[in-house]
Length: 117
Length: 111
Image (cartoon, rainbow over all chains, first blue to last red; front, side, top):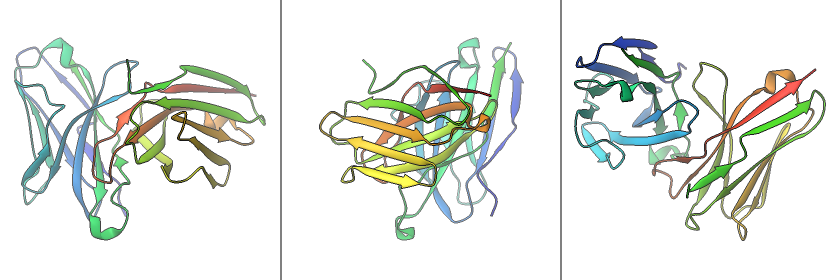
């Protein structure tokens, strides 16, 4: 059973470009969370999605950031017009459905390290 | 202040026990977690405890929860060099809610 997969693992973008980060949840998981980790900091919540729905985006910056989890395919975190302050590690986590009996377990992917030059 | 606080660094010798401490402020926290992060890697779920429990043991790991003081600890018995990593404490309010993390405790195990 493959774990949470993220790609790319490393992404370099110049200021003003767009960054697209992908996350495929664990098999059977229907909930996806995105977190951002700045250097020497803990993880900060950004957005929580189910298929075709954004459940909680209270941690997302109001501008330039968007996320989706389509019916088919991976979840995408999109950052438009990147700035140097966007440089960070972006982690995706997934959790199983309520019917699994263990919806409180979040499993993390390896992360995408974004560098903005 | 931060919702979840941890000491930043702990150094122990191989074979000793390690105790990593965490305090949280949200009294409605229902689930409390410990994650391990090795350099350049994602977070590995080590263990978690429900707020109605005082203790949970899983092989070399023991979690203690003092709900009155909002204090959580992780004890690693017989610490090995492979345990060197950053350990994050996290809380959530319900099964589907987001996790709030501390800044992490770097554990260094020397031979």
